[in-house]
View (cartoon, rainbow, N blue to C red):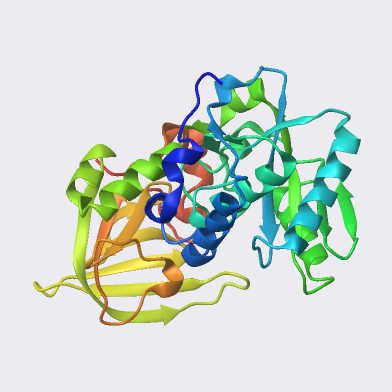
Length: 352
């Protein structure tokens, strides 16, 4: 298939899995789900020889339909997940009246990508080398590049292994979609999966970031080689701050991990990071030096990405900033994915 990207051979084996998931964790800016669970899913797919290929969007025909597939609540490579995904896909295909040609990951992150790969393996379609958030993870469903084009994520189907299936034909907002899916998932304690976001290849090519999945493998290999300097240079990043985690404050935000993390360096400077699942704003001595939509990534002293849920007191960390995809630098993008979105009274501060 023309335009193919990392193949099963390239990410097969423990080293390949670890590199791919490390790279995904780096670009996830603290979010993106569990690294360990993601590795387990990839091991199972490779063991079963069912890892789907990763292909470029342009390898498909312009009128073919791609979807996103993701878990709501707990997700794993289990028989329950298999039943849930197949039920949701069957329901959506019935509504669409056409075949699904590929799965586009919703966001970049280890478990987010593993869930997309697992869904694609069950649907027997490729994973598309792209994502809907723009090369990173985000805390809110509306913080997706398709929001900049007023694209509807419906129809979408959600199902669990108990035989419950629901179809959301239309919705007024991304917030109402998220409430619908989370409400369904709370019916049972098992897994629920969504298959939705049905868009043509042509429409996707105009609205999402491409080649963001394959770069995870490259970034992960650099991290495993201890080449963080080369990684930062490769993605036009900047080393923003280094020090020891001196304080972690929990803030209120229902349904999210919300923190204010303080980092102190040897020169008595203090960096603070606002976290809402992802690392979103960095201050150094009360001055904002970087904010969303730029990527704020944290590495530990061994050069491994630190998920926001695993950051701990006295941990020595380095804060790295990467420029976000150009689509987020548009006027509308900066208005949507901004510190103001999270209640702060200032605009986005971009890397210079």
